[in-house]
Image (cartoon, rainbow, N blue to C red; front, side, top):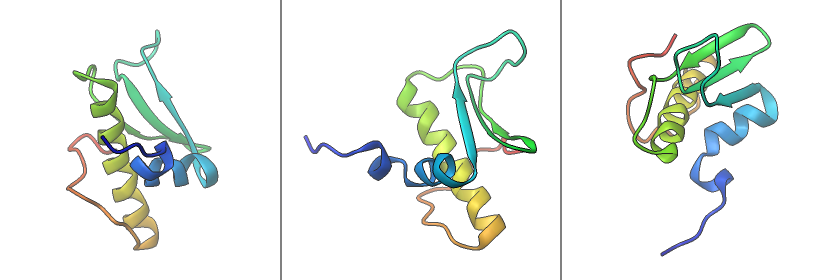
Amino acid sequence: MTSSSADDRYPHLAKWVKAHGWIEIGHDDYRRSFIRVLDIGGMVWEGEESYPTLEEALDAAEQAVAAWIDQQFGQSARRSPPPDRAT
């Protein structure tokens, strides 16, 4: 089993929280989604209500942020298409 850092596993999320905004994980009283990606302007993406694992939630957010970075800056190392719930 190979060990890697979160920065290696989720490079777009790492870039996001270092340069663009933040992520929220978990349920609250205001939103139905389990995971959300936000910036100073508000919600950039929100995921599904639940995921089988935390890893799957982070994978979905990674793909969504990769798509956002690609759309905004034309640079992404996307591994697969973004989830349909991108806003």
